[in-house]
Image (cartoon, rainbow, N blue to C red; front, side, top):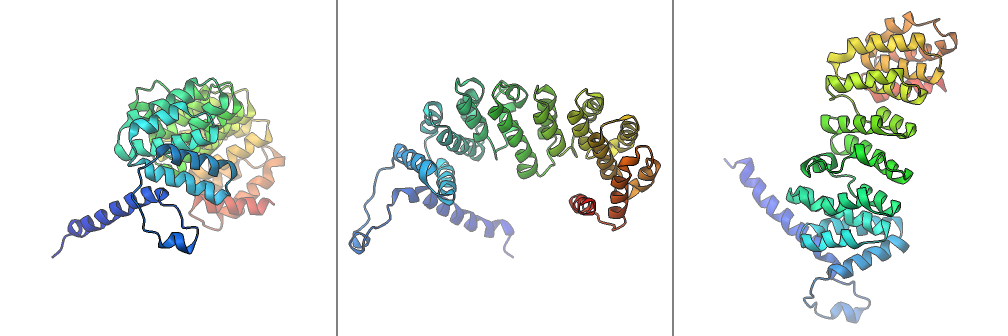
Length: 337
């Protein structure tokens, strides 16, 4: 009997050969004529500088598809590039778009080699570059990697909690986008450290919109009790957007916290005056209880008569017995249109 491991090894070797070939394809120019095609290929020395020059041209004048291809090609090639050259390129680059692409390549190499120290030049530019566009580009360069873990392994000298205090709105937006992407696309909502980093960044922010977006869009399914309590405290915030975002976030906390958070959201709904915050409280209650939330919704009917159509829409959606949250939310929104 052949073991799964013994069959996997040849496949892995084939994958490695394919990856190395892909990383080197930029060295082979496309033939411009039949005569060129017939010319024997000659071995050519690698030119990292030339590849960056080609990337810069692609990012400035290429089609969206070609820009994506150029960035992905660099990420693939970076795995076999000398680390020192790539780090130096990140340190020296002045064009924000090229810096972002180089940063993604460096972060990819860092993850591939499991050497967190490789991203130090990128972290340094994200926190200390004089140009806000460059700072934002450096932050965006971390997107798609396990950036929260990389920051921790580099001693926590640079964190998203620090970066979201940046005076430039484009840097703050990059922080928000990174954390939302990392939660949803890298860890699929299951990573506690990313969710808690998002909460810490939101509560450190002086930008209510950025904070509200983080709290309402990052998964809270794995956060710990202390973080849940920090979220509950935001139900008393002076900013209605933050109160609403906290209510939305509390709807997604772990099951062990659901009973206490249900009481908190009921109290919020009864005492709140802002319709948007009340709407968020209802959403949080439904997400906490799903089908079991129907009696809670009925107990709130008439508290704010203008919100009763919202309760009706939730009740109608719940009767469908949908088990996936995104399907239930979509159906409720359809009923309210």
